[in-house]
Image 1: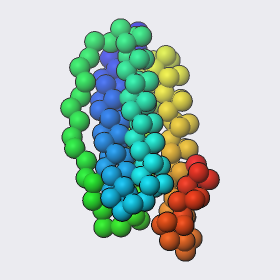
Image 2: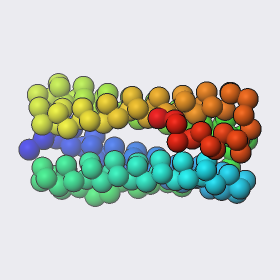
Image 3: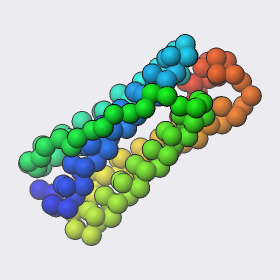
Image 4: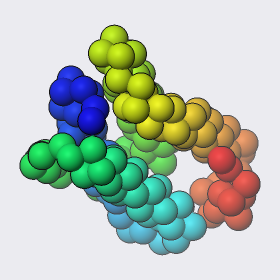
Length: 158
């Protein structure tokens, strides 16, 4: 079993991950409406990854016999003033998620919850990659390429 404080935080994290899924879907739609298919696919793939993160946590909770309901998830915007604003929102979201996983790890450590702490290490490592990816997108936007040209380089990010 995992500790009750960690279980509660993990259930909340499922909601955060599904919220991130919604936010990335909104970003994908923003780019899709501008006929930027490459950018749209990039953010759609990010959305799918966030849903997979939620599923990973859900599986861990089930494996540890935690009874829970799914947290409510709100909507997400599909409009941004610019591509840069969308990517900055994505970076801010990833930084927020990093803080959430750090707080989870602290709670697991404080509770002596070795199982929970071990599980969280994968997510902490993943957040390094997620933040690096968003910083790479900002670098790409700052490269001087227009958004259509930059699409060809999205596969090199992350």
